[in-house]
Image (cartoon, rainbow, N blue to C red; front, side, top):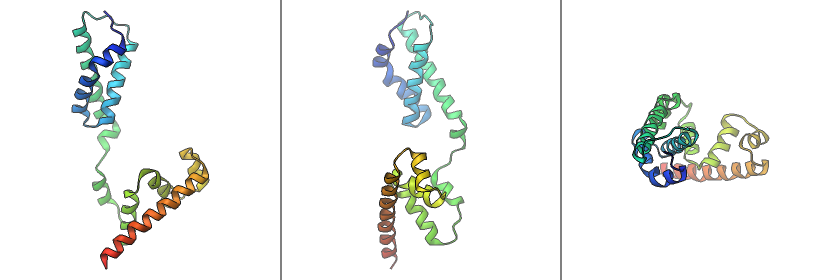
Length: 160
């Protein structure tokens, strides 16, 4: 017995997501697991005894894939940002405050600020890495600097 993948997705996507999320504890990883599970069903040529057998197979595959996600090098070796921040050393309190302010920026500004100031990439190199125009990189740098200026200005005013 084979049921079209689209029908199975409609019926069991939610159940598989919940099972995967319980193991991964991460929405994006759980969504990937569900997608991989349906892909594996689609690719397999296996015949099943009943719809209940298909459901059990899908659930088992999703659980195994979710467990595999937790065993990846990345997941085993990641640490919370707060723990990582404690390992960093800065020459001055201002350097530490600046680094934290950069981390607080929205991602599109944080990335260009980091690449430009911490990694010493040129505007042209950043544009190539991010696949955006050089003018876009310049705009992001300008806006990111302005956000940093405002954030640090407020912090310094609070200290007074």
